[in-house]
Length: 424
Image 1 (tube, rainbow, N blue to C red):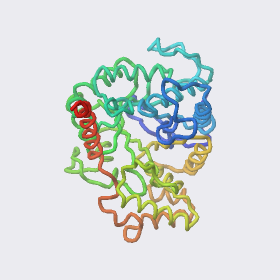
Image 2: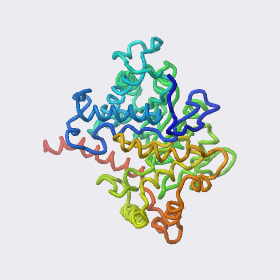
Image 3: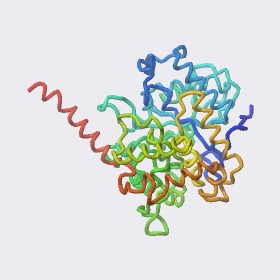
Image 4: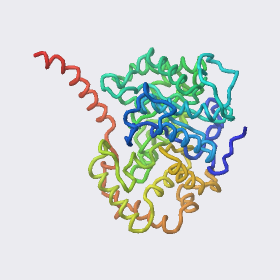
């Protein structure tokens, strides 16, 4: 069966690297929504990897959402992780894949397909990505970058997904690793072993601080060769308030003393994907969750941006999504979509790009093609460097990812000391 992608455009992604898909949908389905990970609706909060079942009303709704995205809107890239719902998301995606994919007798990892498939799509028509490194809610068990755990995690992911291979296996939030040494000595060798065994086609990494990704990529190349990693997934760095992926010249690179992270990746043959165009809820009318790490100044600026949009009759989230989708250097943007309605909204926005030639046009010219005159006028107000809501942020346009990691390990140290304190 040939996937019908009439509703959502696909973009050329990797013509040179055979490990990666040659084409990607302009929007990918971020699967953290298929759990109580970011929001807990009534009846969802009791779902765990041990209690999740196909018959649960939330699971039925999530499976139908995934089916709708893939089969009716052509969103054929699914990005999940063991961390999302601590196994629930991968399990739910696996349930959906059982109804989307057809049986395949050619499995390399012959113990994977434990459940019969009833769908009609070939595995090759979907792009299924997952991650390693971050797992449990308990801070003491949240991160594990050891070789053995990485291997076991990939095996477990394959079983949950009921697949024989993962398209891109990604190192998850490496800024939280106790040291880069453990990544070089254990995690990355385990990832390369997974690739050697055929459990994954390509390797990637994803995290918030761009400088940490760059450091890992440089050191991995020195240790394992230029082709150790194929892809970088960044989040919250290609949106209305933070364009640092393309604007900050702070990375040493080949052929020039400094470069942006996007330029570094291009020179290093690392392909780029982006996630969180809504900046984890900042660029919505309802605002971010309480745990959001953004500084107060940024949160207030995003509230002001939302008010500007409301006054002009423009939806801030729709504008933010189209702004992120419009950059020629990003092959696919991941977006969480928890139900069919959100899938349709995202797909309808993406369909505006159907006639765009990303190979011959700047971001501004692409935006001129896809935005209405009113939307373009409001976007210009938001991005005004003198009077716009983000114009006075200076360093507060983002948060400190390294500090978040430092604070986390300080919490872990405190938790480890608690039994001793209680005994005294």
